[in-house]
Length: 400
Image 1 (spheres, rainbow, N blue to C red):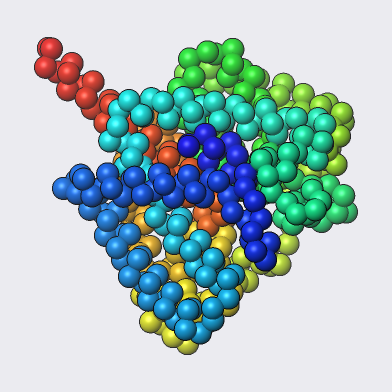
Image 2: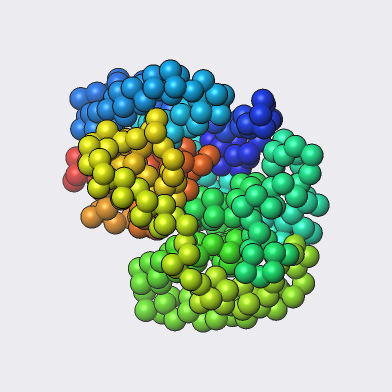
């Protein structure tokens, strides 16, 4: 199930009014339910108690708002939207299903690593042959009549004339794809013992992220590179910096052979990083409108405004949770993640979540499938590996 969520998140069909039903949502919901059951089974643990309080508080607010939605408007779109506002919060529960099962933990790590490689390989095929040439409707993407629907919906780079689009693999969205890559990459790097494979995968990761044309992706990748370099020995730092320079030259040369409506690397980076007008950024404009609403009615800070949303702040994760569910649920959400992460005990496999928590302040993609489920899977791996290390340490102390 985890492989389907990570590799084919947009596999599915279109139901009434063009609303998609993805297999990843069904699988993620099943894993979430199993995770909630595991949390209830281990309800004496602090992490379980935090999560159950989170899910309970969110459910109370959600059902209250659902009542108003049903009484005021019975449109299918409104009801489906309400469901998709709750599933991501609940999706964190997947971590308990993984963390409490040592045998499942290692299997999930293997699935995560293989999914990471598959996503990179498929994105490379898109880059070389064109996204439409390798697309399979209802499997790698779900669309009605034309693949142009996927490209034009969220992937066109208008500042490059409208003929260039983002690389998005099986995620139908370049920003969403790069968020998932950064979450999965540290797990893959940590668990991969074949150095030669990493020598292929890491350069390919850089190539793919650059053509995803996501500023958040660039910042995330820079943070990942910095952590890899500064957590290495002095000689390895020089080697990584040298390889990085070779890699960048290789990408500039390679870009001239792409057949995916892509521009040259330097032109793409210049447009995404330097030729920007942040005053026209829609997400911050929406945040400003919401803050005006807060000034008019400060109580929405405590119970949110799910049923009366006019301008939802999807991209900015902390503000969106406050807007949907209020400050208490937001506090519990971050409490669960931070407690699961234990960031002061630094490990390579935790880096993806740390980077995501930082960059999600600007672009989190949390409310779009499958980010929340992948976050739950990665949190489960982190908790499971921490416990595995603790068990090994305890066994060693007993032997000594």
